[in-house]
Length: 150
Image (cartoon, rainbow, N blue to C red):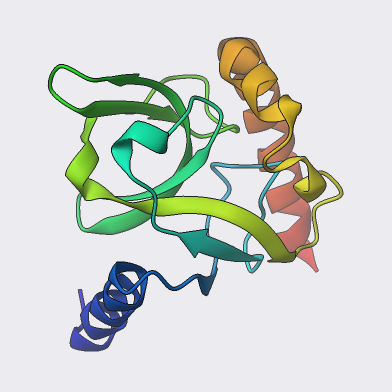
């Protein structure tokens, strides 16, 4: 990881620690069709107790910041189970202290489904994810391929 990216993430972390809401770009297709590459989202720090299945969490995993949907949390050891909407399987468990915050709003998007962040659809996607994740994954590959052709 380059020093600039590391410093940028530290600065974002500091702003979140101060209670500020930050805007950051999204990369990758794991949250397709809700989020797409180059979308801009708003992140806000949130306490573990306030995290609910359906929230789209931003957390650190393997040196990367990831935005995936919270599927389940365990209070005993404060771990989070997440999954990208465009992925068929849950991620490896994440310690709650790796969470940066939740996405509260999509500021700029190319997705017609971004409006669904923080609606009842979030809870629906938690339960249907093993099926819809496979469909979204396939659709995301088609869209991604189409974007590369242009």
